[in-house]
Amino acid sequence: MANRTPLRMVGGIPIVGYFADNWENVQQFRAEEGDLLIDTYPKSGTTWISEIVDLILHNGDTKKTQRGAIYERVPFLEFAVPGLPTGTETLITSEPPRLIKSHLPVQLLSDSFWEKNCKVIYVARNPKDVLVSYYHFYHMAVVHPEPGTFEEFLLKFIKGQVSYGSWGDHVKDWWKIRHQRNILYLFYEDMLEDPKREIRKVIKYLGKSLPEDIVEKIHQCTIFKAMKENHLANYTTIPSTVMDQNISPFMRKGTRGDWKGHFTVAQNQLFDEYYKKEMADTDLTFHF
Ligand code: PPS
Image (cartoon, rainbow, N blue to C red):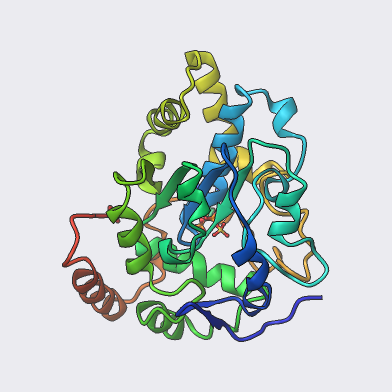
């Protein structure tokens, strides 16, 4: 049974208390050659890209991707909640090549990923939709502290006082090292705009070549509606004591611009000022 516990600091970053309790095991984790890391700030399209990558690696064969739930096929490195296997426990028993999900900022990630030349796919999403998605997720994923009102959550987000800390630092730090580390840096909004173009980018990055009918199949299997109905992708197999999908479904809206129905004019102004300041020292830009 999981409870709402306060966030705890790990290396200067606030994270879910249970994850912090298990930090020693995450620190001891070593990546192996051939591991592929999918890293994101939370609520940026992690599950979507995970399903796409798993399908690509199995040449679109859905019988193979039905071997388990998304969190078993792509274990979540720093995950730890009482009563469920931790991410590192699941990873130890995973067959190579392993797909690994993480939300860790660059500085908390084990150097072994670089030493072993692991491929890394990073997905970023505009912060207004991330914030809205995260707010609903805080309500349903009950390992998080109470989110408070939307206004209170927005202020916490701007101050970097949500799990995984500052959104701006996360997306910028990964952006800075993308060439140096051969990272495929993708955007959620680009995936919405032209999913097959983005799927082709991933295929190329993974050094594969797949015919167009398979690209089409992968696209069809990963459209929002298909993933919402896929119990191996929509997290409905996680106990409701951990994620209560009656409060808010994991596959909630899957769109761009949902923030417009949540922000007041004043909140939007405040957020725009935050965004402008946050992005003053980078050439990284987002579509809202
Ligand atoms: S998590 O908990 O951080 O791993 O969440 P993550 O998977 O990164 O993000 C969840 C949001 O992604 C949306 N989603 C999708 N959008 C479009 N197409 C597909 N296939 C898809 N799959 C997941 C999901 O609905 C969450 O966004 P919101 O805005 O809450 O709907």
